[in-house]
Image (cartoon, rainbow, N blue to C red; front, side):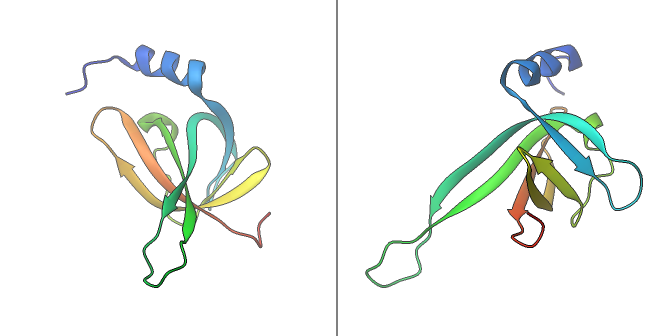
Length: 105
């Protein structure tokens, strides 16, 4: 059971979030507030050359992303991302792994 209330999660997103536009496969687009993270990760591919890649992801309230599934599109700061993994964390929040699609942007 989550310690914080839905109101606490809303305040957290209001303080640190950005607006994203979610476009489900079926149905109208909607704007939601999310925490966006696009960190670089080291990738060990062997050899002597270092390699890094970005791993875009968002954190959102469960109610804002209910029905979200792989293949749907979300737009953040005018960049389109394809939803790849939807992971509710059991606290009322969902982490969503994204993929930037160069053909969408």
